[in-house]
Image 1 (tube, rainbow, N blue to C red):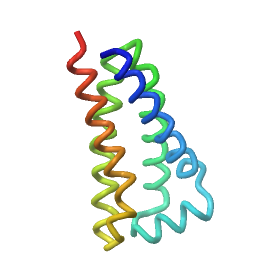
Image 2: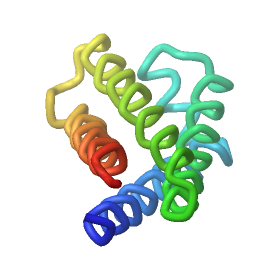
Image 3: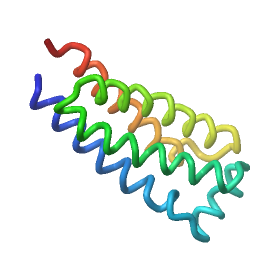
Length: 117
């Protein structure tokens, strides 16, 4: 069970870091995404910071289970918010799919953390 939790945590952490760092850095692409999703650019930078923090929490969560639980649980909520944001602006479902897959993987990671002895 530990190996599955660690593997999912690492994959999810890599995805969140790759997704969150550009948002955190800002830049024209982030501004364009914020405008498209109709949210302030600052909010998208905060989301990027949360994604990067969750990535770190997932990695450290192998040693401190409570941190892995918090990071995975927070990502479930954050990624479902991403799905809703894409659907709210009537993006095609394919645009919301990465956030939905991340939410599902985060939920699986959370379940594995909670099931561990």
